Amino acid sequence: MNENIVHTPTRINKWLCHKLECFGDFIKYYSTDKSRFYLEPFAGGGIYTCKDTDCLVDGSELRALKDGFSKCIFLVNDVQDASNLKYLTASIKSESAVITGNCINDKILRQTFNLIPRSESSFAFIDPPGYNRLRWSTINKLAAHGTDWKGYKMDLLIVFPLEMALLRNITRPDCEASINRLYGNRDWQQVRQKRQDDEIGHSEARKKLVSLYKAGLKNLGYRYVEELKPARFSNPPNYHLFWASDTRSRLQELIDIWSKPRYLPCELFSNVSVHKDA
Ligand SMILES: C[S@@+](CC[C@H](N)C(=O)[O-])C[C@H]1O[C@@H](n2cnc3c(N)ncnc32)[C@H](O)[C@@H]1O
Image 1 (cartoon, rainbow, N blue to C red):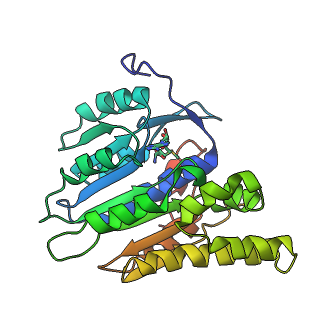
Image 2 (cartoon, rainbow, N blue to C red):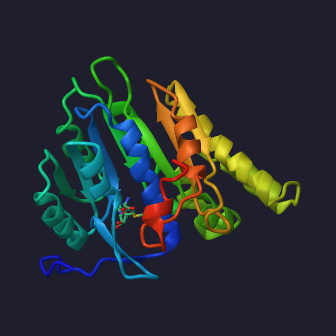
């Protein structure tokens, strides 16, 4: 590891590594237009280590810079992560900016939008550490203020922490306020009620929670709103994906990428097998 990265990279499991590999493939398809701005409101330190093998794994930030976008804006809440990311991005030729701060802070978001000229289109990757950090007000602001000169809203790819977090906590009274903030309304409480009354099971509740979030994105006026349950790399998959765009559907690409059987780079013979069926 480079000694200038003072902070030891977080150790991640294979499921997270899988998400990053899929994301890397997605942006290779997506970013044919290099002039597009990339925004990551929940950015991290840029690099991880794999729990099983100790090998270094690029985070979404470095993948976006190396494989897709030359104009990246990263909002990093953690000061140490921000300093690592600044160090790592400095050697990559790009027009990137690392802003230290919390994405729920209006001033920080305004600072971000000021860096994106209205003549340019943009894409945001929203990958929160849990449902209790993601607020509808943030999604709303990204959609409302990230419009280009044609009036197209910012494309959004949202990693929605459904299975491991939201579904497990839906009936807990102490989680009510954060779930209200996640949806920006109280409609989800009907799902909670039905669950508490045993009218619906786990899988019906999952479907309804996904539909409600999708409806929220549609209400923002997005032309294409799509969702995908990733293939069962781990059991159960711990997130759901949402795509929102005014310009085009990406559902087939998401399905192809996230459902493709793949070896991870640290796995044996990965170089031989990973791209065999690509
Ligand atoms: C799931 S990680 C995603 C990192 C990156 N997408 C990746 O996979 O390489 C979520 C990140 O959001 C950061 N974070 C947490 N709360 C935040 C907030 N309110 N504003 C901005 N970032 C936040 C955490 O420090 C963490 O690095």
